[in-house]
Image 1 (cartoon, helix red, strand yellow):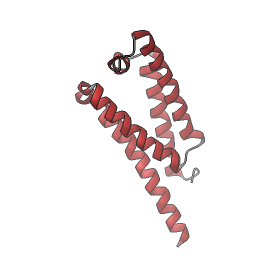
Image 2 (cartoon, rainbow, N blue to C red):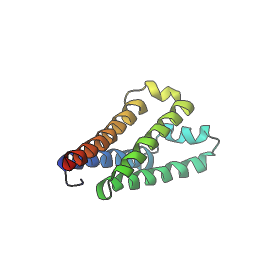
Image 3 (cartoon, rainbow, N blue to C red):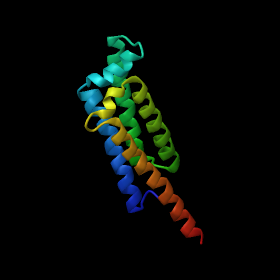
Length: 130
């Protein structure tokens, strides 16, 4: 399935989104909202900076998985993880939900790509069995 052009496009897009989200607001510029999420959880500023950095590294690694090890299971993890992150932001930092380029739009778009991948792969497998 990895060689299918539609699967490649979806996986490359998700790889880019995850790597960008890990690098730009977390590793290169530590966005105040990223720090605020950890501080709302009771983490000190020093540890919040470390947590933002660690989550950035984790997001880049997760993004790279879409380039090199994409599978249905990875897409299911993506769906669950993005849902969890969206709920977390809704609870901890609801003000971000009304900003331009907010987590609702980004997370739902990324979840949509994984949903399309899962359904598309299932339809390919079904059509090959017929």
